Length: 535
Image (cartoon, rainbow, N blue to C red; front, side, top):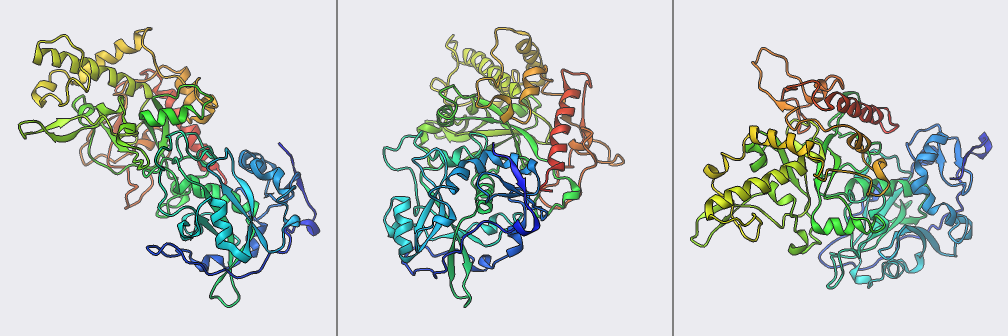
């Protein structure tokens, strides 16, 4: 990794050649949509160019020694930005140096579907529509009218506007396999947390013209590139906003930094398509069915059906992916956490598990930690219980599988099997059985470094699923949220959807299988978040 170097006062201006000042060429977009660019975002903020590319600190006196374009407030910020900056650093010295600009061109950045990393590209401003269309490998009339990204990343300080271009109403083309996705965007964060795209994306800079009636195209800078990555990580995630990078996740506008916003631990259950797509990003290794993630606090109230019968206060969020066909959303492990009302042959509504639910994540209603092994154990417990119920109903020895048993048994048939006592006993047997395959991160990309609690999960004995349980208290008791219980500070006050202090949490056994260690692991992660330069 190239080192950073400090410059003198006379050397503190950015290395940028004079930018092309041609006003936008008028072109006709798809008739059903309009240009969504907020031209006011093109108002120039010259002081922003003096800020750190990584954290926006105004005291940015360090520069990338290799390209001379990227600017940082410290060597530490330069090192943290290198995994992304390094993808374009060398090319900014060669063909795409701002001092080697072809006449009448501006520099953009493209995330091409046929590439494994983003790259710079020269765009002809004399025929800008055609240049954009050719870069995206589509016809001019098929270009989605641009929109600015500035509005979606208000926590970043931008020196001008940045536009985004991509194909209009893009979707997977017929015959395009699920592994033929845009890897240059999918690998900008931990694999699987960013949405899978099936098209290319192009970004250009712009500023408001002197007349204020149009925009002028400008070069994409290294500072823009860092902002584009933040934009993709924050807005291009799954609809339920899985947090891609703790240090880059912005504080919600309704919560001040002093209140220390806390994300929640969760467990993601991958569908068949996601396992296949993620496996091709892990050098051919089979991706895990379940993995730990972090998410913003969830305000949803409805508990998962089968876990709730066992006294588990788990909530499920579905990760909708419209690019997948129904058969590709098959989730054999996740089906037991979903249920829908369907009609049988007699027309009567009955509970049924949704085998084609796609990927989903499980979170505790109070924000308490869930171990991936809790999910695996409950899956096997459910398989066993439903098999025994199936034997009682049909007098058959056939194991229960979705194809053989479309509908769930009645609540009266489920209750004797799905109890807290039975699952607690099963958990103890499951954990003590050496033949049971438990969760491990060793086969995933980058090992535990991709996971907030990965190394802890691999080394510690998982706690009981009932170690953190909501317990109502008389009104005379003060209310405590999960983070106060974990020793992570006082709960913040907020009247919006982020309030998670509706539950009191107690621990049945403070020495239960690693609870204390897990508290410390959570605290370490959240302390790093609170101390990050983004606060």
